[in-house]
Length: 293
Picture 1 (tube, rainbow, N blue to C red):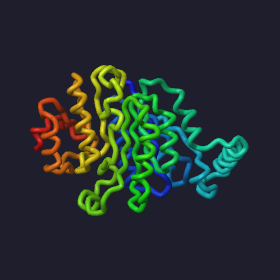
Picture 2 (cartoon, rainbow, N blue to C red):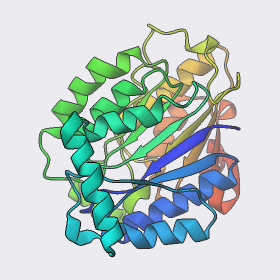
Picture 3 (cartoon, one colour):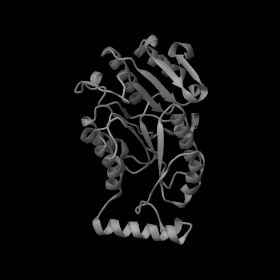
């Protein structure tokens, strides 16, 4: 598997456990054969994350984001000067962060995969639009329970951008408080309000598309399988791939103990368990659904 995963670490309002979870995700994906190259915001509270990843052997990219970073967040005068220089260039040429990310993305071929993790509705929307020619887009949003407009905006962005993607995943984890309290697993407790909207439709010949650069696709979901209608649609989409004659291996980066039993029953009713393998990479568990129900 030769895909490239970009990990965009959390926005400034997310610290501690979320960053730790992201490093774990990066490790799991790298151990699974992906080439992982993190993109980390140039902010004070990300220095520890950057140092940790560098020690682990990752080749990290630093990204200055004038809209979310303040000069006082930098440790040295050199970093502060770098910030002002980049800010001046962007102001002179009106280059937004979205365009900088777009310039990064166009370097890479269609066999590559973007793993984008960060906040900002418009940034995510523009980024997904710029990268819609990629085989797979995984789009994750941080916990913002108070953002009542996210579901509506997410739906608009999908209609505008994702219809043109051969395969796309749009993940929004605006969790209900009771679910977050019951399963307090941070980023691994991801629920999905819209997944595989391009894949589950009939407007694309997905069966002829090479996912991850090979004919037999492997679908990777970051987060535990959670009782949410959107994710059930994703499972149905995998079933649709089976109907098209494809073999699909579903990998869930999460903990099987946090997958509710009744939801696994729904999955079992949706797809013949003999057709679906479920893998939890970090625990070495590789079982059929019927073995954990």
